[in-house]
Length: 479
Ligand SMILES: Nc1ncnc2c1ncn2[C@@H]1O[C@H](COP(=O)(O)OP(=O)(O)OP(=O)(O)O)[C@@H](O)[C@H]1O
Ligand SMILES: [Mg+2]
Image (cartoon, rainbow, N blue to C red):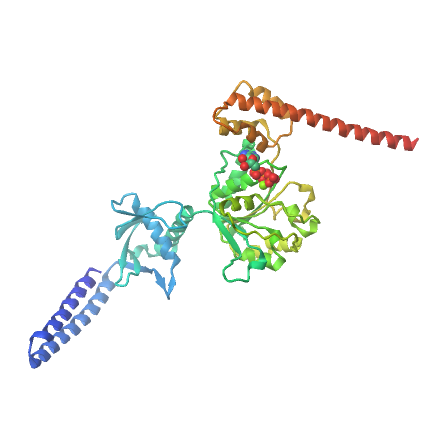
């Protein structure tokens, strides 16, 4: 490489000399000198080619180049390698460049140096950045020829994958929702529209039995690290979760926590805005990897369940908050069928994209067709139920910063006997004005629990009365 540089500069000097000669010498002399110089250039270029081959033949080093553009197309491996090298060098580099583009979460630091040395499985490699006269960048990887197998078989793959995973971590998450299919025709409207997803929910603040929480967390982490495993067992890299339970028990909050944990974008699929199964497939093929596809209130969305009344989803409300003034067209019927949805999950689903999670939520598990929730489709059925004392303690810590309090004992016994959703508990614990202290919030909660306990006891009594009246009637009819 050094030889190349030296000859490059001597050529430039010779050409410069030719140009100067053109201006200062008489014609005959000009021709003679030029001929001499041209033959020198030819000899030098022959010598350079020969010497390059000679050096390459004897040099123990191999060079692989990665161009920014290959056949006029952007080379995505190049971007991943750049990111990897950037991250690699920023630890030690003294000169860094900081930038932020619209898709990255925060500032991205990149090295401002052209050479980086790297080590991998005991071998050493060198990366060099070269920029040509029109600004295209080439990355050159140099290594000893005895490391050829490691570099070509695993090092390059490792660098590209590491780079991509760093890119994914830096990427802003997005919340997508499907545009009504009647709008798809116009060139400006794409199938999905999105806003940046910035939800603070996480598994630490989620009020849930610690054991259950750990089980879900482990499952998600194993899934996201399971690329090789899924490949080995010959299964598409996807996972289905069914979240069921009464309103306000944290189903939507859990989806947000999942997205934040894995850094996945969310696709909130509104089945009522599409006409048929083929539109469903189109939507699926337009989703990206590393995403969570959510169908909320699945029992209200499918034609087979009979109830097609649209319930505005949590995500629609969230998106509306972030995108005011956007027109929303609601269609009150859907012709997506159960078999279409099953194909969406199993058929074409398996063949397009990977690392995807599908989540269904429902308030009424019993209303769902068993085919939809059988094992293999929905890999995990998660019940989110009324608030337990364990869950309350997490909420008390989140909202009031309390680990214990004299009222905790009373709350524990009341919570055992009462059905209250975590959303209602959270509402009581939330300080509406800064003056209200923790004691007042907890008192408020105790009163709410006592009221609820009484109402629920009355409802049980009424139910029992009705039951015994029916039994009495049946008894009278018999005799
Ligand atoms: N398990 C929980 N942990 C922490 N906060 C919760 C939990 N459940 C509910 N909340 C609080 O209550 C609010 C409403 O909860 P969320 O929207 O997740 O309920 P949901 O189960 O999706 O209800 P729905 O069935 O009506 O859609 C959340 O914004 C959150 O603040
Ligand atoms: Mg919800």
